[in-house]
Image 1 (cartoon, rainbow, N blue to C red):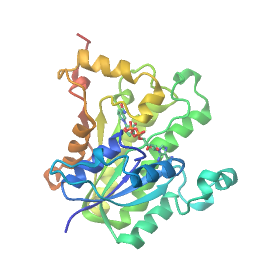
Image 2 (image 1 turned 90 degrees about the horizontal axis):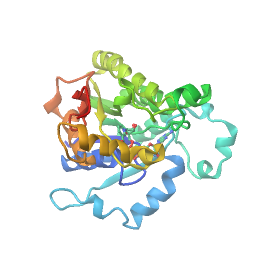
Image 3 (image 1 turned 180 degrees about the vertical axis):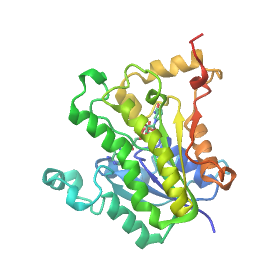
Length: 286
Ligand code: NAI
């Protein structure tokens, strides 16, 4: 039987989530997607109208099939957590069952089990502010959307994951080295995500034989990264200073994710895997 993957955090064809979905599809996996509720409409419309068809092409010439797109807001675990103003918001009231618990339940009803869980989402409302100017609410929102969202997804999906399965998230080196500009508590959120990768690898490994890894990816001109505002500078910096002087493609991260999700990586868990042209290994810029 082919593997079934749920990828949370795809709303266009530019980000890492899309590339990971493609690599998994090319390896024969069935693709389920979780899309942020406010972005759902435009994503589904674009899909339907064929706007992504060019980027759906797999190495064998066929098109990636997306079996189902689920609305998801990973900052809410269950309906009781959703504030009234969000419930009433037009972009939310048009969809239903988009809290983490409900999405896991719906996937279970639809398909029974999954094998691969991918977390490719982050949000930091104050990302452009230095940490010293970040509010408590901004900091906690970054952690909620970018770190606890993974804990929650794993918690709710674990019971429907087949033993031997794998989970992957995306992190950034700003967790461990100073990257001015990656503010709003996003550096803190990535540090939490990496630490949690280890603890969750233990808990999910012992309990369910599920692996938990995170990919520390180099800079990519995604929608989220453009919102931070310094992405072109980071790409230029990497081109100049990394051991491999080429622009990083999303596909390279997608392929590493497909490897980590596959039996080829059956002994790898609790790891931060760098897919960044080697930039993390440099001590000085040259
Ligand atoms: P992206 O914009 O393609 O993906 C982020 C996704 O998160 C979007 O689809 C957005 O709708 C979704 N999202 C935001 N809040 C959400 C919520 N509450 N519930 C559900 N979905 C939500 O951008 P990108 O850059 O591909 O991001 C994917 C992951 O890669 C993130 O974890 C990011 O931090 C990480 N990353 C990105 C790097 C880059 O240079 N682009 C570098 C290293 C890591």
